[in-house]
Amino acid sequence: MVDFLVHKFVKDYENTENAKVRTSYGVMASMVGIFCNILLFAGKFIVGLILNSVSVLADAFNNLSDAASSVIGFVGVKMASKPADQDHPFGHGRIEYIAALIVSFLVIEVGLSFLKTAIGKIREPEELTFSTVSVLVLLASIGVKLWMAYFNRKLGKRIHSSVMMATATDAMGDVVTTSATVLSLLFCRFTGINIDGFVGALVALVVMWAGVGIAKDTLEPLIGMAVDPELYRQITEFVEGYEGILGSHDLIVHNYGPTRSLASIHAEVPNDVSIEISHEIIDKIEREAAKKLGIFLVIHMDPVEVRDDRVTAVRMKVTEVLKELDERLTLHDFRMVDGEEQINLIFDVVVPFAYQGAELTQLQLDIMEQVSTLDSRYQCVMTMEKGYVAQD
Image 1 (cartoon, one colour):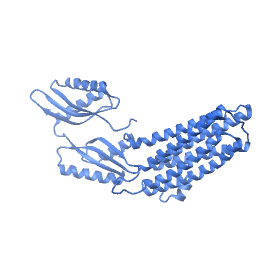
Image 2 (cartoon, helix red, strand yellow):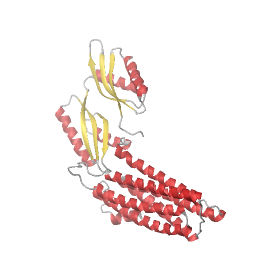
Image 3 (cartoon, one colour):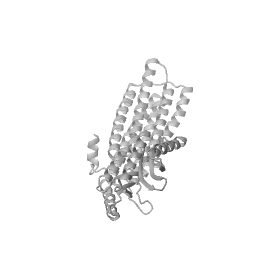
């Protein structure tokens, strides 16, 4: 069914990096969500009135909020597809994250409203009217929500959409809440004990928890996330794959929406090659990164000593010292400055975020002590910096 809908309503559906194609995916997913959730709301609302059940009514209005969320998602996707302009040179892609954030607030608000109602039902329970047809309607709604979760998760992964992934998570939350509602009705039917208010409160709490999760997932790219390890490997391998590039470091990626990223990286080039030649290579990498990776890449050149075997040997020894202290430590921008009584080793060390305060200071002292054992004249001039890559 998912592939049928994609083939039917999305032109050039395989070209998921194209902004227009992504918009078509988003519009289709929003329309499916609106239709399914309104249908579920109508069915559950009628069932809730028949059964006089707060948990069923809470579930019904949760579906109505999902329909509103789909409308917001539709508007968000359309606005996010607007091209770049003078005021927004990197496009409007982050609107999609804002739309998902609004969805999360709606979900939390629905949960709070029905938590209040459920507490009232716990204090003053009301008689439930059991109906086999009503239970079957709720079971059918569970099946619909399972399909919607699968539908949105599959499309969300395909086009890297935070809104669709948030919708998929919300749908799975609905499966849990509706299942709990059905169990409470069956429990009351066979035991005579009315736990509708308690289940309604549980449903409300699950709904609010789902809203908090959606908010967390959408706030991260807005605040600024660490570089995904897979994206880090993709970009660094792309840059280092060109002849004339010896290595790279300090990769930073700024996200301006699912299809728009700006990145900067330091590329190491041999210092015995003309700067014009290295600059030509850098320009070529930047152009091809835009075409092949879809990333606006800015590259800073770092010349590396390749002719002096002594400098190369010392750099390797210092690297070994770092690895002995912590396998995660790396260095770059290594230079040697000879003096009459001491030799300055100038370099940057990339350390994990786990090193803070006194621990970071102690690490710096340990590096200086270990390096001095190589040669008492060595004096480390270090810059300790944190990486921008998320941990695997």
